[in-house]
Image (cartoon, rainbow, N blue to C red; front, side, top):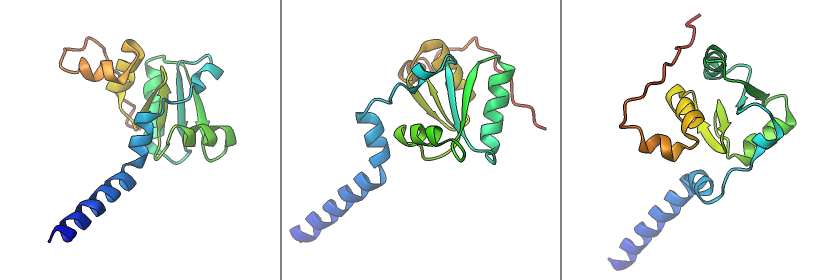
Length: 138
């Protein structure tokens, strides 16, 4: 009975580590400072076919937020950086050395104004005075 319990626990731990290795890696290793290569405060890693990448671009443009875009299907440098940032989907943004996964305007604005995801999460209970422009539905 003890062997079965030990085996089950071992399999559970190995599975958790395997499935969460990207998050564990991202937690333990600070993202490289690829932003230092650009004047723009936001780096967007995306693809030409991603609708959320398009929504992110519209959001950034409407809010007059300068950004540098890498199409990771075309740019070898962009793809390299995306993989170094543990990219697993698009869009992926790099703002203030913080990686933001997916289209998430409130987090984008919070990181731009507060400087970190941790600070944005800590302040999430506070009323925000930011006015966010929704993406164009067309």
